[in-house]
Image (cartoon, rainbow, N blue to C red):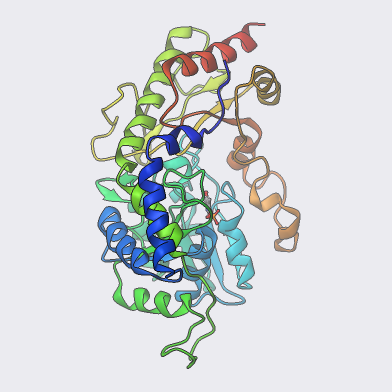
Length: 396
Ligand SMILES: *Cc1c(COP(=O)(O)O)cnc(C)c1O
């Protein structure tokens, strides 16, 4: 049985007519830039993310860039973030001439460790950029306290976390700006590139609106240098259709995660406690520093006001990760490594002077993590096939 890492065709099949009608509506209107669908989507997103404002933008990467531009990050500034994330998080900081000051992750959640942030703050620090990796919010309460104490902005990289909740608050509503991606592999995927920014601050919302169209306000009169960061009307129309199903898909992903955890627990081979002697460590949920639990019930969060949306279900394989991956590939089971090289060790950031060994948790995660299929349409038989494959590998 084939188990792809992601199967967007099965999702499309469930709403094909609806999406095609939405696309046709835009085609008939010939209104392609910032049309009524963009404005409507922005209202729906603001409501979904529990923020006052949401703006559609051209990608998750541009959402991050726009957010950093709006708070005035410039050459010589420092932005604190995690080295264990998608490239764009630090890439956007570098593109503005600023430096990404990395802070290692908590190895249980793979999110930035708030206890290590304060020691990295300098007079040049402008912002903290936590990433809600794999669909689980970073530990935001201590991050917001540190930011307040040092008068720093907090930009949430929520590209993987639309609808995630931390202590009852939605991702993108906790910091000063939230950044989202509609890349097709994200939980809410467009038919191409797309993204959004959210904020509760009217001044930041206004600034991002201006910077999204080259910094001109009114049009052709420029006080600022912005860019073309607009979301296509066609993408907005598609995303609006899909947004209605997002909660159901999230529930599907959560149920799949709970089922995986149950299946792994039953194998006896793979234990569910966090013990570094074990070969496979399952993904923990956490609603605050030092509190960890595994999801075991399909519809019940381990922590009541904490919502992990499982953009990825990621195992940590303390033994032979790459061998396991090859074994599963041969059996047509899709996996991915998010991410094989932590950002402090990327060649393009060599001038920042980071060394191997400086961020041991991130380096360990890069060497040991493996994402297995978690998309909502996955069948029970497929999940069993994945777990059987993993057990077979470690038993052989
Ligand atoms: C996907 C992603 C981005 C970038 O989003 P794009 O829409 O692909 O530009 C940024 N940060 C994280 C953590 C991501 O997962």
